[in-house]
Picture 1 (cartoon, helix red, strand yellow):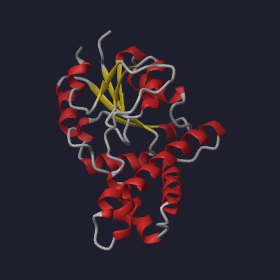
Picture 2 (cartoon, helix red, strand yellow):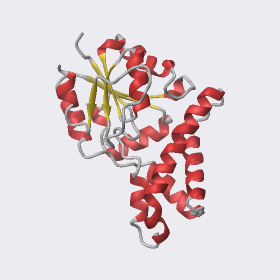
Picture 3 (cartoon, one colour):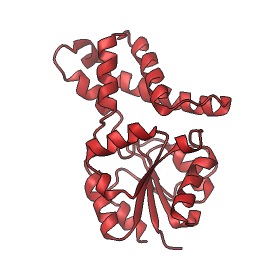
Picture 4 (tube, one colour):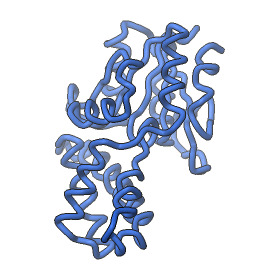
Length: 227
C-alpha cells in the first residue's frame, strides 16, 4: 500500500534537543555550564522521557512543559548548576529549539510530492507551535498533533491513533519518523511504516515492533515515502 501521510516526532527528530544547553554554554559568563553542558543535555532529555513514561503508567498526567521543567531541575541539581537565572535561560531556549539543518528542505520536498505531513509529539500545543514557528517550518506541515488531546504520553496506542483519525487513513498508509528507538518500535507495532533516525548509532531496542528503515539523518525521507 502506498504511503499517503508522513508523520514526524518533534523533539530529537525535527528539533535538536541539545541545542538549548549548547547555545547557553557558549554565552558569556557561562563557564560552569560550558564544562558540563553535554552531560546536562543528556540528563535533561533522559529524565524528560523517563518522567513521561512513568506518569503514563501512574495515570498522573501533566503536560510536557511541566515534565520538561522537572527533568531540567533534576539535571541542574545533578550537575551542581542549580542557578535560577540559568534555569530560565535554558527553558526559554527550549521553546525555540533549532531544527536539524536538513529539515526544511526535506519537508518542502514531501509537500512538493503531494504527501500530507504532520508532527505527532508528546509536546504541549503551545510548545510545539513556538518550536515550529521558530524553525520556520509551519508552511510545510498540515497539522501539529499533541498528546494533550488524549491525555497520555507515547507510546500509548491512543496517541498513534490520533494520526489515522486526523487523516482518515489506515495505519499502513503512514510513514512515521522518529529518532527515539522506543517510539519507532511502538509505532511499528501499531501498524505504521517506520523510519528510525538513529543519529547516535545506538543499538536496536529489544521491543515488539521494528523499524522498516534505519537512517542517520532525514534527507532521504522523501525517497523512502515513494518506495
